Length: 241
Image (cartoon, rainbow, N blue to C red):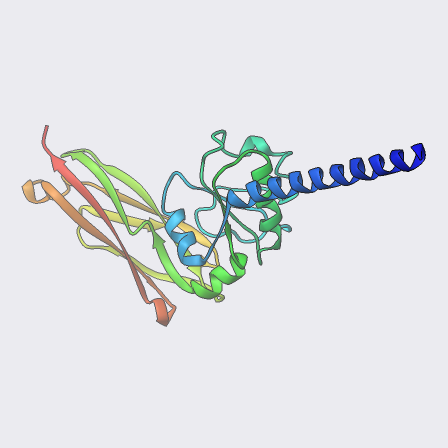
């Protein structure tokens, strides 16, 4: 009789332990999943436009990154290179790989490390590029703020060839002689980016033409007939001391 009672007690203890740990795992998984949100390419672009968002490529071997990515860390080395991740665990993190499998695992790892706001690009860079075939310059507008007449303000844009074909830049021009622009590379491989360096000198005309609130345009012409010209703008308020 004692043996039967002991056996029953053991069964309840073992069963209770299995149930407890099962519930713990489910709760942990629920918490982890609540920190991770799948996003499509359009949502990715919206989030990436916020300078507070940290963009992380985790694919191995290393691939050509989506424009404006902050860092590349292999999906299975996140804890090893945690010093390259944001110190603030509430920083929004956009994670992607080539097709989605590595970023899924990376997102789980980031959540276990305490990050609270994780966005995983559904379908990875492959899906993004299939949907986002274009040649684009980012950001569309750069605000130079207040520029003192006689000073030269400078800024940089990023031009990305987000197509499967090589791209040649055939001409760079601006809407006014007060603005000049150059590209660091005139030929881009598929999915490659280059910097567009812009200078704004409101005193170049030596008169009051370029005072007040101004908008100037940068034109980039290419040999891709579908994206023959891309445009960006700078804005500024020019004042005299």
